[in-house]
Picture (cartoon, rainbow, N blue to C red):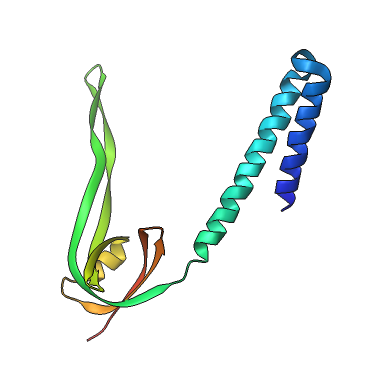
Length: 143
């Protein structure tokens, strides 16, 4: 809350300086106060929004592992001249498809979770629904 108040104060000070002295005198100060205020307000709105997202309920359903997939992105070799090449590293994403409540959803998981699951496993899936984007929390295998 303190940053929000400081952001608003900075914004108002910048407007007052600009209105009082015009661009010639207020130039750098104007940018400092105006953009400082804008960034402060945006930062506060981002924090408030992320706190609201984190309050979304944790959903638990019985689910079955349908498939495991990986997706590689990036990587490659670039010629930089004089017979030299640069090599970019690839990033691999790990995904698991679960079936629950009569439909199928894909979840991004970390490598350790990916390695412990097998197609056909059944258990309790815990996740959060963030406006249609599903965040994997945990999967507990059950017999």
